[in-house]
Image (cartoon, rainbow, N blue to C red; front, side):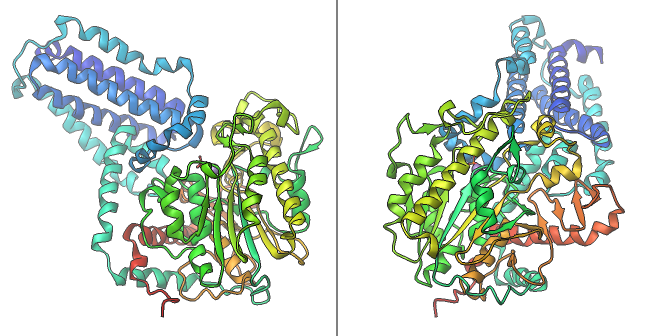
Length: 612
Ligand code: GP9
Ligand code: MN
């Protein structure tokens, strides 16, 4: 034992330092529950003992270098996740790495997330690097002999047994809740798990056939709800404009800040439109693109990575494709590089006929902020193209100004920022207000061009704007504590559907982005037969209130199931878990079958109803 210690002080020290660092950093970053802590400590140590243990097989003079390298590598993984978590409350998964080509555009967001004191995250690496120079740490013994390392091997074995005996705990983990998986496996072992899932999902198309599709259809038939007959075809042959409101959440709608409305125009529009106040975003790591995917396919996005990046060449039966069979021209407007999120490949695949992107806009320093062209300029310039489109058209407009970290020039502030300790929360209000103003201009121009009376106008929030890490400060604005149920309700985003000639009405049905496509088809008088959609018409008479989020949370008008707890929707109090059982099963089945379609590319086996 002492010989082992003497020879491998460097290994033990490096291992101990990174273990302690990982625990401290994780405790401050991720939200570990008490029963997860034991597993987290254990599994992290087990991973480290094994990965550092490989060093024992290397020639002594290279061993210290190996330990230093591992220490640096793990520190980079840990730190990247800390930065990512600050805004996304999530961990980076392997398919996300393909997003690094988007790095240039992401830079404004990343710089807002890192701080100079982050060098402290690497303090142990500096110590290890310094000690590595000292000769006395180089092991003098020859390579591994069982005799002198049996204590080490034994430790690894004991840790493995201990960890495995907790397996029953792991089995109860919700496979869609990544935070729980990380909290039990530890950050590093998570990547082994993720790599396993990655290879498994990548292999799926090869092993699938038509029968897989019939299982999906059976599930959908059981949950299918008749669309509203009176609304069928009410907007037949009208144009459709769908606007993605970047990061706009429901909590700003109808609210004021310092006596001024935050969304005066949207509030006005809502009076005259159908408004869904319990509408949830269902996006995953692909954020804006996941929302586009939901709206255009009525399928759920994936739990890992962005569908646009991982399954861009799958066969889809998307809304623009369907509409083209009814004489529609489909166009998409977004003033970012067209390759971002692979949009240049995905849009034609979805059936969009034209794609107006960065190069189609006049963009200068004057009219840009944060991620690019300001929304007002975006709307004004898009109008030139929109008015030229053949009618009827289906057009998607993706706004950008209200994007994290919510930068906006003083001159564009229509309201003052909020006053709290979170710059993000404070700046959010003027940028939302700015996007609201852009929407006023859009509607004014549509009216001026004579398009407003012949167009269904849909506006939806793509995903959250304020991450959980800012809820402490956000609660000051909301003037209430954000408990678990409240946090789930904060995942609501606005959905406004304006149909010319119809009076406005607010609906409280619990719904999600997956429900938009069947709703639109019904309004346009297009039969859903032959389309595989997971959503249901928002106007359906027998609609049951239901939304499942990508992390496995399920919401109905009675209960909320989240993080393995069942809560009353009304009071937010915990209730008997069996009350949530039907929700849990339905939520999991929805995600499971939708994932199956994407992972196995099942629409390959579907006959096109329009082809014959
Ligand atoms: C990128 C824009 C923003 O073009 O749509 O994407 P997000 O970061 O919100 O996913
Ligand atoms: Mn977005």
